[in-house]
Amino acid sequence: MPEMPPPPSQSDIDALFARARSARVIEGGAVHGKPMGGQVLATFKAEELPALREALRIVEGGPPFHCRCLGDLAIELRGLFLRVGVLSYHHGQSVRLEGAFSDADLVDGPALLRLLAARGVTEPLARHEADERDLARGDTERDRWMEAAPEALREGMLSLEAGPLGLPPVDGDVVFDAGIAALRASGDDDRAIASRLFAWLGTSTSPWSGYPAYEHAPLVLLQRLSPEAVLAALLAARDDDTLLGAARYAADHQVVSFRKRFVREIPDEMFVRFEVRLARVPMTPDGLADAKVRLSAARAIATSARGRAAELAAQRGRDLACVAVSEDGPFGALVTDGQTLAAVDVYTVVLIDPERGSLAPLTTYEGSAFTDLVFVDGALLAMRGNEGRVDRIALDGGGRSVVASELARPLDPVDSGGVLCFVSAPFEDRIVSGMRSSVQRASLVRLGKSAGVEVIAPVEAGVAALAADATHLYYATTNLEREGALFRVARAGGKPSMLAKVGRLGHATAQPALVIAGDHAVFADGRDLRRVPVGGGQAVTLHRTDAPIGALAVVSDGIVVILGEMSDGSWDVVHLPSKGGKPRKLGTLQRRPYHRLKMVSRGGEAFFTLDDRLYRAR
Image 1 (cartoon, one colour):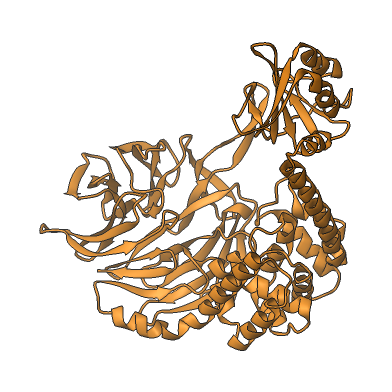
Image 2: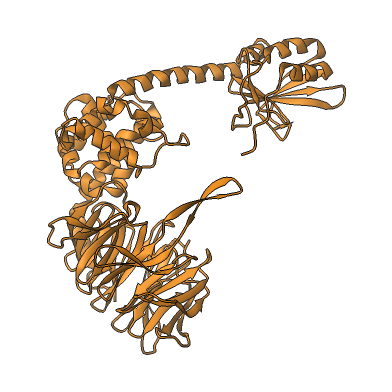
């Protein structure tokens, strides 16, 4: 990294003042050596410049530093006709001499603000003093927060609040696993730990959105505990702090978005207690109004399931029907072995009965929500890419067991003749021109009989889509515009062979764009539905559609496709007949840009997830 330039010396600043005949203090900072052009707050004549210079006296010999903002004020020094220099004033603490200099601390930071106030410009000083009071109040509240924290967490508190760059750690960070381990080492069970975390969270009177970053820790730690234990602690909450903390957790964005199953278990009388307790919190009017809205939204989720059965029953006979709704939030993976449907409901692996609209939970994960699923030789396997592990999930609800661990970032599992195959895509560090970065190396691999990984073929360009039959893997490599090629490689290994070029392979937010149907690979290529023999040959277009194809599934009498641009607010679901005839539009579904779609074929019908809904198309 280039060295930071030195801070200015007092003689540098004095030399500018010696050349100046007047000065202006301007609202806003400076950029590229010029004031940003805000309101002129004060003008200083030649005889008034010594007082201004004294207010800007700096600490000599300090270390170089550079405030990331452009400043609150700009001080423009002018000669007889031209500007001779500009200083930017930062946070009542430091100045920057615009040019090849770092910042310098001021001997008396607010002196300039007092000088302006004496000339009738009082707002900058009032704003600074209000900021100082808020900072002091924040320090006091931070100290109170630390004192209320469970003793087992205090020693490692900083790691729960800030990562290597000073930013809050992400929810999936292992530091929270370490925090839970420290709490459990105290001898308490998860219910007692949840009660203590609720009580800690309830000592804060901060807004429930836009709160200090350090208050995020108990919210994440609570998500690491078993939902049953957290619910038991919530239902037992009675004292003020525990009750307020439980209310805040129940209304938290992550909980109402991704743990709806938990929220639905909260009885209405508990929400009444939450509302009574919230009304007594000394919060700002805006903060209190926001918290009430969030709590009301959580209460609505808890009562929304009552009419769900009737809603689903009314759609069941349609060609495009919603047949199930998630319990927690957006569905993740969706797989089938031809009979059984399984999905990931945020953290929970579930079996889905589309005829009854019911979800049967099999196992629940903690931490990362990224779980992929695959049926291999009749067994349901869960792949935890961030943890490098594959688990076998018992279909009778008997839990899970580890099949393989310490895998190098496994992704996109498929079944090839009863063998688990997947993409291994670890990140590797590299140094280029003295700068550290990382590069992702992808390979197609299979899991051997001893749970060891065996490389099928390296794929330097990465894998955009993956499918398999009993003996081979079929994959696509594309650029960011989804342009690339399809390849085939034997499961046993060997040199891949190219099957076809593709101009635009489906959507990044919808799967699959490539499926194997008998002796053909069928794939989405922009507006064209195409197929190519798996053994090689000419690719042909089966259908030209009205919009780009995002995903596809083979059904008994044709292919169901999702049509629309990746950024569209709605997608059409269309049936393309296999033996001629016109496409048949089954319906249009509204979506958000972040909604992801996963489609499978089962019993001659297509099933797909979109946000928190499972649809059937036929």
